[in-house]
Image 1 (tube, rainbow, N blue to C red):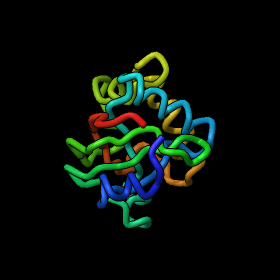
Image 2: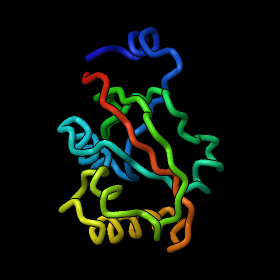
Image 3: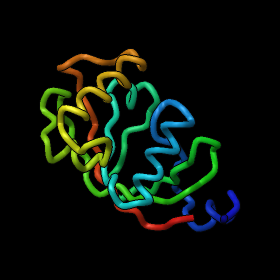
Amino acid sequence: MPTAAQLLAKYPTATAWSFGDSPKLADELAALVLSGKKTATCSAMQACIQENALPVVGAISIILDGRGKPVCAIRTLVTRLLRFNEVTESLARKEGEGDLSLAHWQKEHQRFFSREGTWSAEMELVFEEFALIERF
């Protein structure tokens, strides 16, 4: 596994972060990226603004597991701004979770955004599609 210094040398503008809001969820979602099932993610626009973390097309992210260890690098390919209730079945499927259905996506994301304190059916989301560029 590369060291932090090696990753910074290779990807000097990359940001490092994990999916989800728990070590268990970070591990599960990182595994979906590594398997090729997860090629998208979304965030509450409100959270992106508060954290000054709007995704940028072409940017590289180092994905961390639940223990904070780097597992892969991804590159942002597409970003979309849409409301929670505008997410389609095909977009939900790109997140690679559960049975890949819109109903599953809605249920699990409502839970997540409720824990975060941002959920509403009309909330704005930043939907990001990405490509896996390196496994660590």
